[in-house]
Image (cartoon, rainbow, N blue to C red; front, side, top):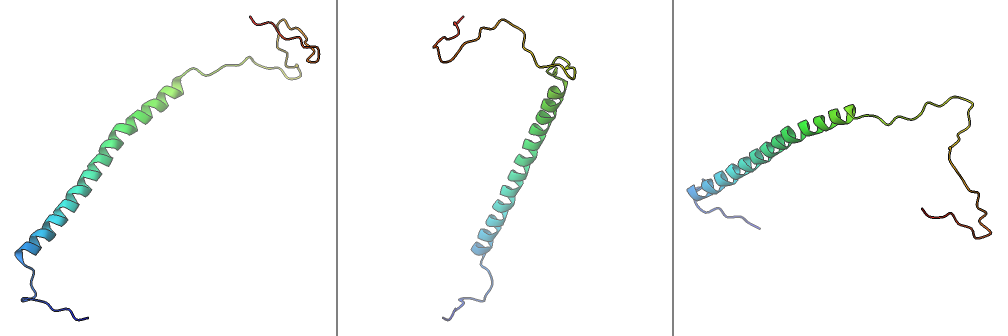
Length: 92
């Protein structure tokens, strides 16, 4: 296959314009994406920091202190039900 160049080998004005527009649009698109990423970072980073601070200062769940050697007993009124005789707990 043989490639034949027509003309003096220089780029025409139209070709230079197309290349310039392609480069300009590429730079504009990359700039836009960078600005959007920076804007998202500037918006989301304080939101995450604020959420972490609020979570850190929320009251913690407190459980009753347990002494070693004591059994785990849930106090209350219970009724023993044999599953074989068909009795069920009454619904409140």
